[in-house]
Structure formats: C-alpha cells, structure tokens
Length: 86
Length: 157
Image (cartoon, rainbow over all chains, first blue to last red; front, side, top):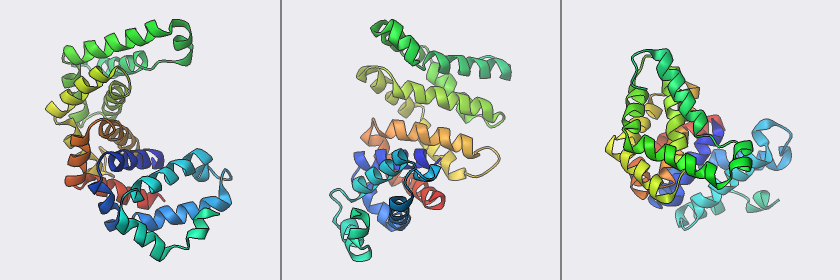
C-alpha cells in the first residue's frame, strides 16, 4: 500500500504545484524525513527499507520541495541536513 | 461484463486484464504487432462502452472481487496505448466522473467495502489518471483527496 500511496502523491504534486503546499499543512514531511533517516541505516535490511522503495520516497521528497520555498525553509529549520546527506 | 451472473462478470474482467497485460514472453515474440493488438483492444473497449460497463462494476457494493478486477482493468487502460488513446480513456473517465468516485472511496477506507486491497487498486487508478491530466490533479487537490492520501501515508510510515 505504501508504494501506491507514494506514487499517487508524487504524480499529483508533479502535475500540480499547489498540491505541494498542502503536504506541508498535513504534516507529511516529519514522517517522510524520519523514514529517510532510518533508511540510511537499514537500507535493504527490511522490506520497508528496500532500495527501490527508499528511492521512491526520496523522489517524493524532492518533488515536494521543488519550487516550494515554505517547504524548503521548513526542512532547513527543522532538520539537520547533513543527516540526509549521509 | 454486462452479464447478470457475478461469476461471469468476474471472469470477464479477469480475462480482459490478462489480455491487456503484455507479458515479457509475448512481447519478445510478437514485438510491435503485440502493441498493435493491445492498442486495438483498448480502442474497442473505449469505443464500445467498455468503460461505462467497468464504471458500473466499480460502483457496485456487493462483490469486492468484481470491484477489484474492474479497477485493475481500468489501470491497464490507463497504462497502455498511444497518447491519443490515453487521452480518449481520460476523457471517458472524466465524463463518467470515475475519478471523483474513486476519490470518495479512498475517503471511506477502512470499511467493509473499501478494504486494503480495494484501496491499493483505487490508488493505482488515481496515480495513473493524475499522471496524465492536470485537470484531474487539480480536482484531487481542490477536493482534499490528496490530503487524505497523505494522511494515510503518514500512518503507513
């Protein structure tokens, strides 16, 4: 189900910029970033952290913040960016 | 699919789904002719009321296996075919208001009609439809459906 949820949201935000703003409002960034942080340690060690799935979530994150300054600022203010860069 | 017998409807949907699934073997052997057959099949479905029949099976509440099978056929219709055919499929989906119906079903999850398997089929249809139409993505955003999908994702994470 996770893959289909990620795919549906990704396809909508790619096509329609205003959808990106609402994702910040529903609080999607915190669980996405927690998932990515966990995935850096556990990639391919458990089905939920399979490489392909992690790539899909990273793609979702990059689409969510593409051209969306409030979301970019939220991440910069709330996340140690070096944790993701690792 | 217009048959009154549920077994016949289910088998018809499953047969169409299989026919619309290009296997690697058939593609290897038939190549371009396989694509043409697939395109003709989609064309037949669109021009002869196939989508309206699918729509009525997706909207029924009695048999979730039929609902899932019909949603899978709809996904196949959205995944294959030329750009012109895809536009025909999307136009027909808009005319039948199938996206708004699928969106309303996502909001019902979880209940006795929309279980996890049905939800996955609904999400696949919404994902494929929104990848091909800005109107539909705008609709999903304005109606708040995308927010509800995002909330489901936060739960799954």
